[in-house]
Image: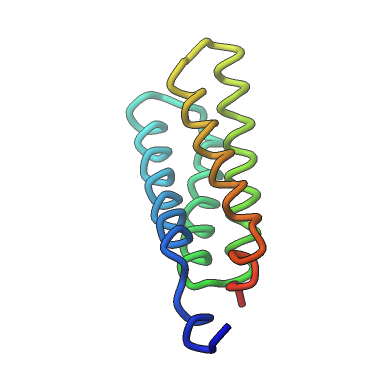
Length: 112
């Protein structure tokens, strides 16, 4: 792999980083507008940090993104089972697809 190719982020990684920021915004809106529990702010902070690290191609950003995507997917599946909120099942599936994308070797090798 050329040094130039190693510097450019994969388009999918950039999309996942932007998705992390979107989840952060949705979480803040959910707490303020829909009276979600306050611990969701911790997810929002983790989403924002993960998106920042992933867009900068940092290894810690990649690891934090893996953790937040996995934990968020588990939380959404629990909410689906407990409260029967069907849209959360779709979001959990998206999170699992992103997790599987991020653990690919070519994605891992791009992180510094």
